[in-house]
Image (cartoon, rainbow, N blue to C red; front, side, top):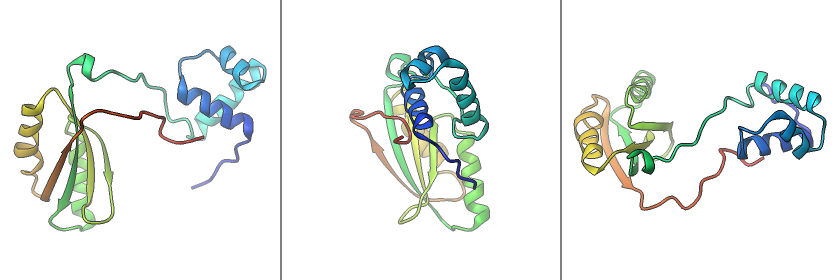
Length: 155
């Protein structure tokens, strides 16, 4: 992996865009203290380098009827590369799983799940997740409320 050298202006651009990806280039340039053309060049460079991976709308799950947020800690029966890859691929097919991480320690995967309600989540855990041929153990944690929501990295 090639690390890209970032100066203080690049870091300001990243901070501002992570907070509000919808602002215009002119507004971004004003916030970081440079004119619009070089600001746009810098943003394009950050996009082309892969540092900026994309732009997304942050949706309110609750207002869309998805009131349940849970985490599942999954242990596989065997940790062979083939089993790990197969389970990781399976998570791509499960719409309820919004994010998934392969982890070290007592378990193998951490799944971030969002569901309409407890019944739908329980059906997923019992009929899909624990039924997966590679799964040995599943521990679930239902969230009470989100207390912090920040960008993915501190810049």
